[in-house]
Image (cartoon, rainbow, N blue to C red):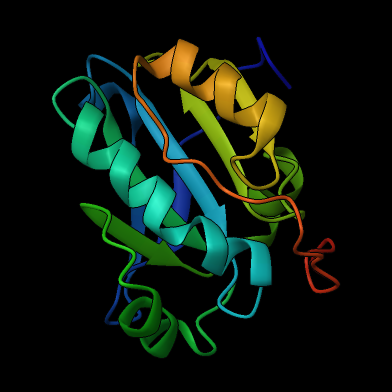
Length: 155
């Protein structure tokens, strides 16, 4: 997926209205964070993606995308995940063309829509150091002792 160009993102806003997100709106690039409300690893990562966003929002546009609207409001309240923009329910063709499914998933996308970097999984070990290097941030440490049985691709 790295190096491929993505079309604009078709999602729903918090009111259920269709939105098309264009990457050219962010000259420094976009961090697309894909999650599910009932994914244990996503909940564990919530504070970390928020920390990254707070450190790098002057360089990147941060967008959260939940693969479902089910339980989204409660998840955001419980985890205190705060990204400047959060959407849900991407169109099926988006899920397919973006190769979304395993969560959490983080994509760094250039203004022209090209995927610069992509990470799947929680921000631990290898992902953590790669993300810190690529985005120029410092991610708080996480433990690797949690297993997520719910982080499989969307059916």
